[in-house]
Image 1 (cartoon, one colour):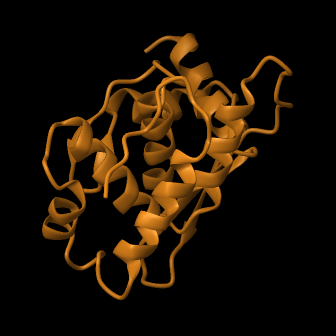
Image 2 (cartoon, one colour):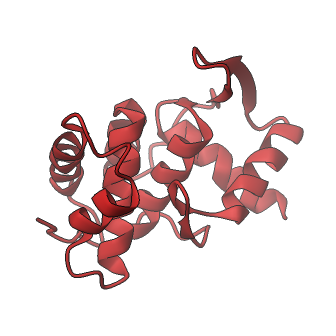
Length: 171
C-alpha cells in the first residue's frame, strides 16, 4: 500500500464532512463515489455487508498510521464496537461539489439504509434484473420495518446529485 492510497482514504473522510461513523459506512461512501465516477482509487467486490474494498480497508489503516486521519473505536449499545474516522484537513476548492454533496449525503444517512442502497446499486451494475428484490433476499433482517423503502428514497436523493457517471435508475 502506498502513501497515495492512504491519502485517498483520508480524502474520502475529509470530503464526507471530516467525520465518518463506521467502517461499513466508509466502504459504502467509497463505493458510491466510485460508481458515480468521482473516485477510482479502489476496486470493490461483494461481501456480506455489500460492496467492499480490501484496498480501502488497508489504506484506511495506513492513513491512521501515517497520521493522515484519526480513528476512535467506540463500544456500541449491542456490545460490539464501531469506528469514528476523522480528517480535519480543509476541503480544497478544486474538489468537485458533486463529490462533497454525494459523500456528505451518504455520511449523514442511516447506516442500514445506506448499506441497502449501495448493495442495490452494486447488484444493478452487476446486471441483476431486480436489484431491490435481490437486496431484500440477501438482507431480509435489514430490509424490514420500512428500511428498504427508506433506502430507495435515499438512493433517489443520491441519484439527484449530478455526477460524471449518472447512477442507474433502479426501481
